[in-house]
Length: 314
Image 1 (cartoon, rainbow, N blue to C red):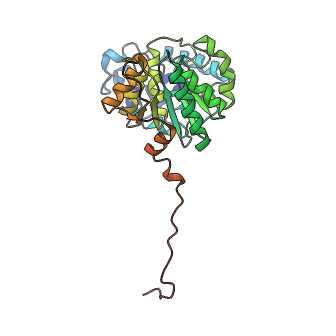
Image 2: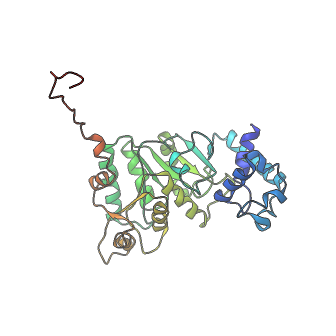
């Protein structure tokens, strides 16, 4: 247990300070350790902090919490990646509000060549589940190293994880609570399978329980960790649409499958398409074409020299 590890965990536990402001603190004082050795009067001067943000910051208490958390994850085989570490997920590094600490159990597929986020309503229909399964099955035959990312929730999320595992694709489940917990509890039976070739990840400490507010933060990780977010089914409101908005804010591609005009669970997707927030796709081939993944498999043209008898000067 190193001091640096302790400071990294502690930075993510400072009350009232999110990832963006925490980065500012580190940049201002010059190191993660410095945040815990400077006086609050100095930290107050950081743009965006002020007395209102820092008055509850008791360095000793935060470090004590971090020590407990670090001990717990070490004893329970939970790994983490810090935003300044070399092996931090490259795609998340591009996001200003990326997690300071990303806890995970399982395999490290975070910097794989192709990662897609597959999201949708918890109240999925047979139509949505069939689309999800067909999409992932077809993609798996084209890209056996594709990584499928979702939120482990009811409906489309768990359908995507299950199909990815059936197709022997790595899958990453992003939690809105500590990775030592499972929510919903009925999905606990899938945890061991995910860990065999995939990961359970979260920015929340092991003490953090599932809470509705956490899932908005969870959605931004799905959007930031992937090359594209694919919305299968969604009502007029919901977490899937928030994930799509976040993906757009990160300048990532967003796709949606259309549905019938009078289908409640297709209204969100149809709205994304109508407002040009998402590109319409109907198959895996549409996704491959839009992402230009097909170009990678196009044979390179070998240029032939038609004038072999010329000298170098000629």
